[in-house]
Image (cartoon, one colour):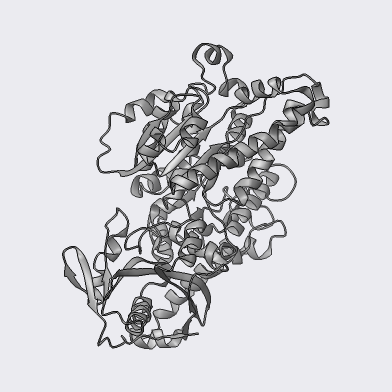
Length: 573
């Protein structure tokens, strides 16, 4: 983690080529150092965070006044920091009989703030939760009496989580967890608070900025999707090829306990939707033996999407894994106990995240917890099937090599697609796919679940969601299309994005057939497309040209009046 002085140096860098994101920062205490740290941290994340900072203690005025500077600035994201210290003063001023209403009053204000913002802006809100303050008025009895400030704080944080769970567009930055991790004496320094109205110390500001930037990055489609694992002395103790299966360290005793608990954490990541891959210098059969036979292994072969164990160099093997998964290196994390291997991978693949694991495996988990590598802003039931989907993808890639022609291979897949409009059942996955897709994304539009619901209700938009099944399994929802009338004879393709798992299957032709047929039947003469380049979507630069669209003044047009369906090997379900 960088210190504040290093983040200030970032402010002198050239931000002109970075993605611009407008951020509003509102707090009831001084936030100028947090503002600087956020801007500097944004540079490390590849963002130009243009930050408008309200005067301190102006949260309500800025939010509830329709003519305020906040709404004039028109931010994409609003960060709100209401501190426990100011809340403590509010608690003290209540009538003693109303002490137990503090959490309810504060949550109502949170709801009112979010509602007012939603009335004026389509902005996302990042809200800092409340750090614990034990005022020692009741001692340990504070945990049993609901009028104590400590009780109200803990209740409020729980209620805030419940509010966030049912409120799309509202995200919690866990300031309380940062205090628990680093300690209150690091986060809060009384003399600075008294003299400068600053709740956050200079030491903790970079950590808070990083956690906030993690959420901003995830909201903009930048997060980790894959964890690549070394094996020997990384997920078990010892060397399987030398020590044998009976002598590697796993289980509930000694250092084996550290490796077993580490595997359980990795398993939880897999169940959350993180893709697991293995990259090990080993004989494959020997490397797989613990997964198949060791009774204390938490991880099994069906948890691993891609298993690569050989004696080639790890850089080439990671490139092979990336080629199979078809995701960016910046979406991957590589864990290896060996500093030599880490350095080679880090130098050869600089976009890849390679944490500097501690020497002691007992410290692996706490260290990785502190890095917050796997930030996300969404979770759906489809995430649980992600490993199986990528395993199917690896099988498809392997089988393809046995066919002489691409057409024969595609026929053999027996591909079927369900095409339907956005609805209440696919809304979470539609939103998530829009947030995750970077490479095959023509205009890189992101949708929250609220945005998807608005599209469903609107008479101005037509929506299409595509799934894909083949003989190896169900790939789930893999493509979304949003079109709207541009003029009486033209439909504009506002969004066309696809999962890269299904590239080179003819899905692009199938999708075009679908929307061209829809346009024909609805009486439109043309489809209009647009490609907005980003650092990641160069893959689709020639997309419309390859499909037969003609370029006119930075847009692409296709006459569909006499459109003939393109041949493909996908049928509608």
